[in-house]
Amino acid sequence: QVHLVESGGGVVQPGTSLRLSCVASGFTFSNYAVHWVRQPPGKGLECVAVISFDGSYDHYPDSVKGRFTISRDNSKNTFYLQMDSLRSEDTAIYYCAKDHFQRDNWGSLDSWGQGTLVTVSS
Amino acid sequence: EIVLTQSPATLSLSPGERATLSCRASQSVSSYLAWYQQKPGQAPRLLIYDASNRATGIPARFSGSGSGTDFTLTISSLDPDDFALYYCQQRSDWPITFGQGTRLEIK
Image (cartoon, rainbow over all chains, first blue to last red; front, side, top):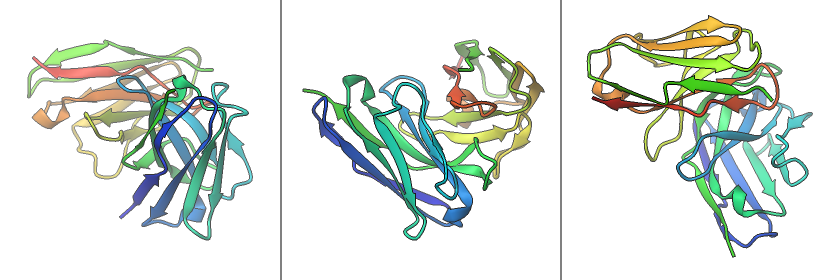
């Protein structure tokens, strides 16, 4: 059974940094791309980062490019989201998610963590 | 960036009725479209991927159709558990984008 558990959320001041972690289990972690998706309170979904199965490439939308960095450690079945220069508009629930497809085919998210709340406020 | 527009914003139906939700893309996404269900306080759940393929464990009353720019999620006979928020999402081009959602509420 696939299981994803996020940690690292909290309340931080604008301009500071935070690192989220997601521990995965129940599948061959090194075969799948993984994602971070956020949802501001009462609003819709935005994919903020994806990393390939082997960590060789990653993608970010313009809203976080240059500020957020996704990484993974396949030996620990864990991936991360480093968030720098945080802004109030980054306030959201952050979900980690596993891709449905293996290896270089990616983009449908079939398993999600429970989410961790990040609040950016002075 | 590919923009997905869902309609209607809210759909009010009764259990047992048929629900039809629409998603229109600002440019062709081929068949690279998924549908998710989200209930309050929960993470989204994948229902349909690549336009018409049901994800593991999804009941047969859920079906997806369409290609190019116009897509439909159909729930053939609404169960009380189906009243929730539904999002479409494309994987044709980066960044992955989601629609703004359709709220399916009990009439």
